[in-house]
Amino acid sequence: MVSPTITRNILWVSCVIALLFCANKISAQEESVKKKIAAIIALGEGDEQTEAVLALKKTPSPEIVGWLEKWKQGVIYIYEAPDGTIIPVIMGDKIEGTRKTAISRFSDDSPVLDESGEQVGVGKYDLDMADTNSKLRRAMSEVESLASLADPDPEERIKAIVKSAIGQRQDKLPALLELQKIETESKVKRALEESIALINLRSDDADKRLAAAELLGKRGSLAAFDILKTIAKESKESGDKKMEEAALLGVKRIEAHISRINAVGTLFRGVSSGSVLLVVAIGLAITFGLMGIINMAHGEFIAVGAYTAYMVQNIFGTGIKLSPFGQSITIPGFGFGEFGMSLYFAVAIPLSFIVAALVGLLLERSVIQFLYRRPLESLLATWGVSLVMQQLFRLIFGPNNVQVSSPVWLSGNWTVNDVVFGWNRLFVIGFAILIIVATWLVLNKTSLGLLIRSVMQNRNMAACMGVRTERVNMMTFAFGCGLAGLAGAFLSQISNVGPSLGQNYIVDAFMTVVVGGVGNILGTVVSALGIGMADQGLQQYLGNPVIGKILVLALIILFLQWRPQGLFVTRSRSLD
Image (cartoon, rainbow, N blue to C red; front, side, top):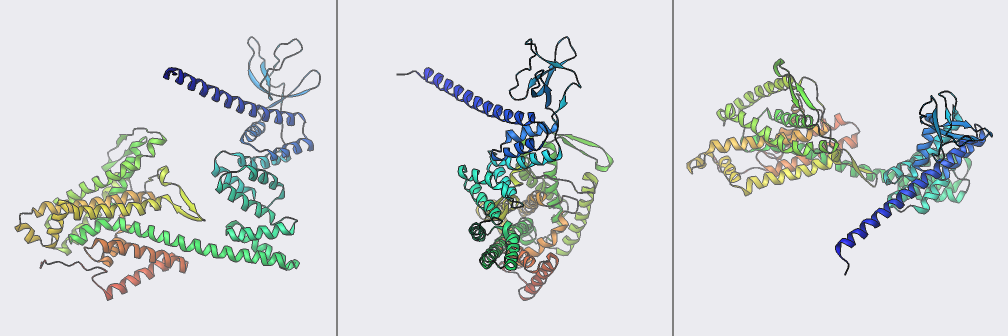
């Protein structure tokens, strides 16, 4: 039986051999590329050199692009040997004891030797750079544009493939056809088929043109939409009936595809807009809907959450300088790198809830506890608190907006059948669902939720049963403010963060709560999604966001005239 030690040693040796084999393979490939470019440089300026560069388009690679860039940057020189041979070289280190610089062959990095076998040294101005002209640089650019076709990253290959079809140049077709033979990724293969079809629309072969138009129409290729329109017009003028019909059919199919994209995109934007409204309004549904407090400072608690995210971002980074009340304060940062900074938002989310809840607790103990059952007084008092908090934001963070950057995992998007799903919008949808589930669990499955519901339904009876109503009021208001802080943390990713951030959403938040039915969480959910989808749908249909919002507001006013208690009426046995 083979011992574990021997097995480990065998595996280790095998790994080393495999790595050495890969390294040698890469080195050989790079040496081959350098030899090709060295041979082209040795040809000297002229049409022959330009044609040789253009021939590299048949085998584009990142290595070729890298060395072409070195050539353009002037790091390759020309050395003429005593026998008249032109040798492309690169400069090395100073030769000890002389003012000469050693040179080595560009093709294989071997030193250039004289007749006696000594290393050749040159002065600073003894050699000329391997020069390029405008015609040669254009040829290099064509090679570079195709080089990404060999990129190991599929997304980079797709970008290069799409770029290759621009201009529908037939000379770019061979490289695409070669890549099509070896490509295995389904997304890349699809992009290849579309790019090849786009180029074939200008082919001399009529059958290829017809097949390309049919393929692009079936695929709903957005890039082919205008091109097919142009070809249909040209075919009509030239009398090519078959091509005209094929191009018009392709245009019709692409138009149907665009309609589907717009419908799905509008639905997604409506759900995401409704989710933003829901995240903003859910805290107000607690403080206003359940407690009956008209909290005009709700928007400022949203700003508290947003500024908390801003502070966490800077503390994870290089720190921040603040000037509250004219006093300069510097808060040092942890100096986390890219990976650490990508995690700051995960820390900012719970902190925004905690900070906003603590500020809400302070407000409830200092002001709100004296204003229960006094709606007009609570409105005026919280409006004053709102103005004070906005001014505090200006004094601490300045009057201008501050920048809160999105982490990497919220900055991208998914594209499904040409419909773009932004990660930040998907996050807010999931975030809204999580908040609703958490709020429902707190209100219906915890002792705190039982106390909140009992106090809100009949405060006097709950007090008679021994419930400490003041503490319940305090915790409920803090919970609602904490939810507003969560909304602010997310809004910092999709909106400007400034002292008046909350004022942009306070009207929409009240509108959502009132339409859904005051005190009804389910009503708030339905109302937010309905308003968001109506808003996006009207904007898409009318093509004017301002008119769309005006119509949504008008519809809400008409709805409340017909049903002033909202979608869902909250039943209660309380008489106060």
